[in-house]
Length: 246
Picture 1: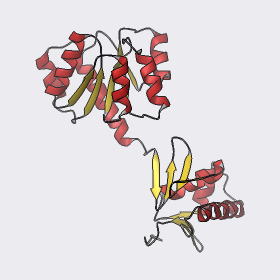
Picture 2: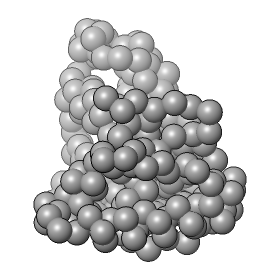
Picture 3: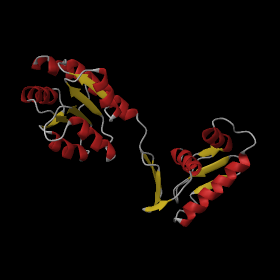
Picture 4: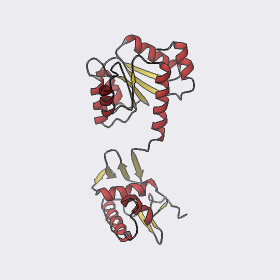
């Protein structure tokens, strides 16, 4: 690993992050934690898998640096349980296990990146910066318009807290309308989104799906959320919120 001075210099340009470090090696843990803090980040250091899992499930952090060879709960099990519980916090697996099978196992369990010990702190900071960029550009896992909430991760829709049962086509239709809330979505756009460009001649099918979606939302308490813009398409808006026809 690099010296503390190198750590500070290399981290100077990285946007401040809240980082969870799960590492049982006292020398590595102390060096990484101090280096991250000197670089302007906040770092919570947990020294075993059980404590790391509990802290990781809190979702208070922008990124996790996770050793895979941990006492109490192994790092892969920590990662597996975090992902199973819906935690999407970016994770860098940090380990002495550098074989291809080890890397593949870590990535398949949900790691976003993999760094093998011994490592240069400069590279760790660069990987954290890359994770931050990807997480900033990542689409939101959920959408909200009025009382309607769409969970993209679990493909679940609720209205005022009540589950709304939708078909896959209805879900996709609702998603594109919500992503463009307040704007007109043309029938051509809807058809291309739902049927991969095979849009000509199926506008009546779109109307059928829109009507079914409207009815389901109305029964759940969201009547009037989807509006028809004559000659153009459809627009979704929250109550009392105007939309643009431009």
